[in-house]
Amino acid sequence: MPKTIVNSKNAPVTGFTDAQNASPIVQAIRFGNMLFVSGQGPLDPETKRVVDGGIEVQALRTLENLQAVLHAAGASLANVVNMRVILRDVSDFAKFNEVFRREIGAEKVTRTCVGGTPHRTGVNIEIDCVAMFD
Image (cartoon, rainbow, N blue to C red; front, top):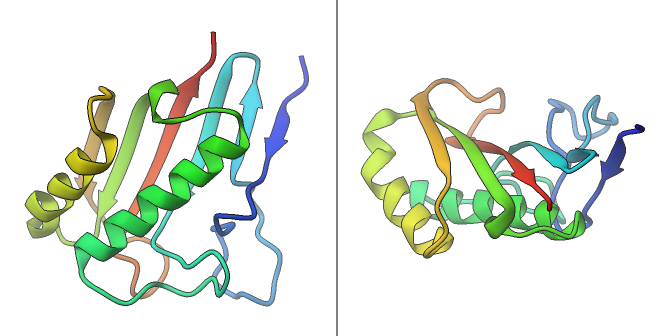
């Protein structure tokens, strides 16, 4: 069974440190009934620059980017079964969680949220996920 690469023009491709070079990763790969979405961050889809603002602004942009990739694959948050979140500053957890709760609505997922250092300066959050299709 071949894997299918998924791309959305409404979300940036991450995984690069130099906007002039092509990214070594893709936004998502569908394999069978599973979709693996690469870590999304708070980058503006058009400029590929980190959005200005605190964790609430960055969390919202990150979740919007994630949803754009899901949509390009024919999925939504309803298909997501697992998410992993990296926060640069774990003291941002409560503020992040409020944005997360609002954006995910009534959907339920499993989630891991840890502190770490995302690879790009100014990025305070990164989220990846696994989604399933029937």
